[in-house]
Image (cartoon, one colour):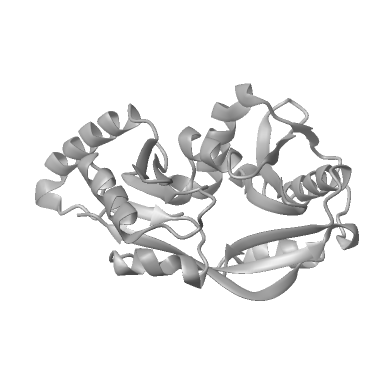
Length: 265
């Protein structure tokens, strides 16, 4: 999920900034919109409060959406003032319907996997790791935006969408000695397989072991929930994240996923 670059011409910058500000204000009051067609449905979810991008998601049992449903999602996003519609990580088969609707590749992601019992996760006592309830969701969204920026960070609605993606979910926060939130991670389990769904560390806490500590806490949760195999995906260009997973025992898989984007103009 990523950011819309805005390059304003000097002569019209004031007008454009005001117009974008008004759009943001209207956007911030919008909720998730569900688009239905027969038994299929998808959600159009605002990315965050500072971006004019939305994300189309679907947790339907039928993995492949119809062309008409995707077109309706595009129309929904455009009518609500968004200028970009993105997808989550998709395999080749899932991408076809979006490519036919004019979407283009935004990023490619490497899939990594490991047996939970074989992961090497050193303990890190710099932070306290504990599960977070719904009362922490606004703080988690703020941490996500700090970690990934307006271009790719999740707002509260996108965060809640991630939390609903698997039947079992754990949200774990890393807290400093003063109780401040330094990062968080979302772990899920479905049909015996574990997933690292989101891992965010604020800039001030990077390169100090918070990421590996969160990963360790999540693996402990998976072991306690009889999870034997765990999967994660991350962008091919995200070297720090790839190194973290590889150093702890994840292995690259042949599968490459992609996120797609449509500029709605």
